[in-house]
Amino acid sequence: MAEITYRNASCIYESADSLAVDSLNLDIEDGEFVVLVGPSGSGKSTALRMLAGLEDIDEGSISIGGVDMTDVPPKDRDIAMVFQNYALYPNKTVAENMGFALKMRGIGADERRRKVEEAAKVLDLTEYLDRKPAKLSGGQRQRVAMGRAIVREPQVFCMDEPLSNLDAKLRVQTRTQIAALQRRLGTTTVYVTHDQVEAMTMGDRVAVLRRGQLQQFSSPTELYDRPANAFVAGFIGSPAMNLLPATVTDDGVLVGNTVIPVERDRITSLHSAGVTSVTAGIRPEQFEITDGAGVEAVVELVEELGSESYVHTRVPGSGNQIVARSLTRTPARLADTIHLRKREGTVHLFHPETGERVGD
Image 1 (tube, rainbow, N blue to C red):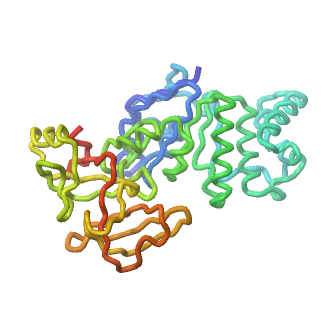
Image 2 (cartoon, rainbow, N blue to C red):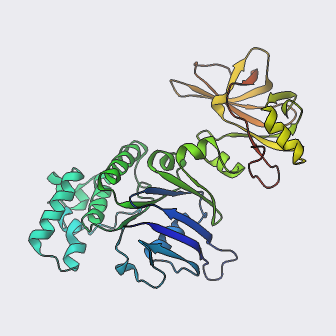
């Protein structure tokens, strides 16, 4: 079994002012695909390198299958790494690259060839086994790097932004292949990315990190539907959730000159807690453009995406920016004054100072 447990795991770099990873707690199930996501400097790659033994655990512990890995060297952790750069030997063929780690472990040529051919079949690399890396595309090279990890049959795959060097179309194709491959193999996988769309489409669960601290660890739908704080709300979703300063009223929250209705029990909860102002979070798809009712806003940009449009606006006076999705083409023009009315759906409420979710 390859359950992974982070228990108050921390790491600080020499001469740094703060922890790179600060008391991280995660329980990753056997066979689960978990994604670590966050902006640059959030500690996601450091957390992965701690698991692989490439960075020291300064406090706390990390275990694999119930075994504490604190003093276990990387080569004895039964982990296979896939990096952002492919790290292939240019003078070796695809087959030799994939089988090199097995050769170093003393596995015979026949057994190596069998494992390499099996992995190549899974990755659609059979016809390229005798080629050198220079004769392959970026996506094919990344699949070779994946194959090199697969033939080892490790307890855990550690993937550190493996798609960053690919173009946009190839990234979408390859991430689908990686997710499907992991489901087929059933190997516990920890995957690092800064791309929240990649995280949402690939992971069974996603851990959102910020400044070395875990913000939320949930399924993609839970992150989208019930973000734990304003940071997660603004980070998950494309375009990001609208986060607007609002005043609590008896009927809802006042944004600009418009009251947006909120359920009575949530308003009562806010009043009971003495909360008079909040940050209201509303997804772009929850706004619709109307002729007169709703929040008045001036159009600053229209993104035409074919099947839908995103209208970027600014509320006069307050300066608040609101993005709304429209399913019709050219719903407004630059500098037009429009009105945005909230459709059905949850208004997410966050404390204006701490950013934590309130009113539930």
